[in-house]
Image: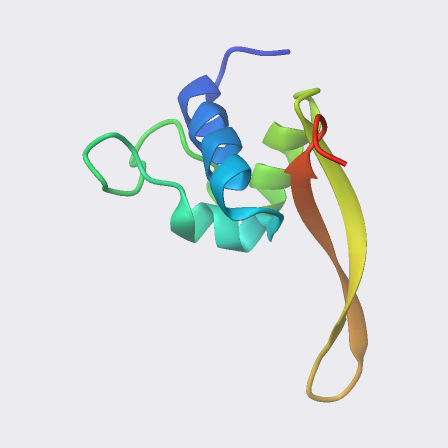
Length: 85
């Protein structure tokens, strides 16, 4: 596991532990630093970057979920904690 972005991943782990599964976009908006603000440095730039950062960490598991859109269904990746079943 790489050390880049470890603070953001630790905060994402804490968020998932408290609130349950979430998508990468939800994590980008919801994960805060100690002061309660969003991360400026060290956070992923967008949802696809968050996916790349989280997939190398063994603490997280991912699951594809079907979501109903306005015109069709599409798949999103929902993140959870690997320990919890």
